[in-house]
Length: 283
Image (tube, rainbow, N blue to C red; front, side):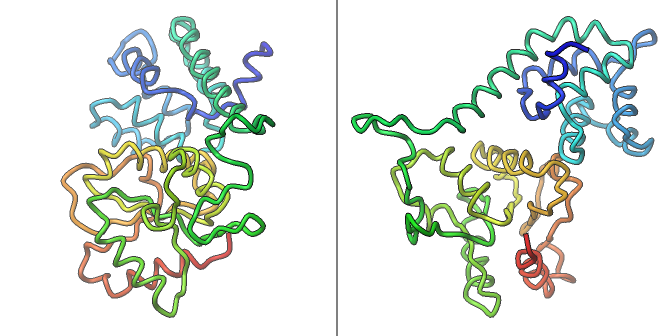
């Protein structure tokens, strides 16, 4: 194994952009009597027979397999994916797509490097995030404001977020929620500040799932960023919430997490108690 391959074993699968994932599907989705297809890859990823049969009904089973593997397995790295392709004798895919994969990995590592670099010590140059930044209304440079949960939502679901504030903050639960439109100061870089809040200021993240959520770039970024912090959701960091009926499929990347469902009349009485308990658990 080359040094480059060893390096890829530490790069999470989230580094691969959608264009590469779709190209993998072009190779693996077609039923092929000679070469291994997506089913062989899924078996190597330890998916069960029933899970693979379920993927069969998808328009792009390769994409679904990659998303689910990434969501539930800490071993889901770029290097492991390339190893699996070699194990199922699909060296042709590795050879054809390796330049694109390497480019995605380079961009991913560059983005991490930029995030880790300290700001330039030049007073005349403004930084997107100032030193000792005040990100939220009650921030103190010496004691940053901390939260029990970051609320991931789209604007059309804001009425439900208001209800969540009433039920979880203004009752005996006394939880502290980070609601972007209420708590975050204006004038900051949205993606940078969001990442900072999710990773360092909030114990958990509540994801308000709806049809509109599925079309939100901001919600997509927040969810995938949070998942990248806890592969397999082993730290129980993400809590999906459904509060109204949906016409679109539930996001596959969250399929393996227990959902707090407000749409079922028979369980509504327990909804806020369960959610509050989940958010009150130690990190």
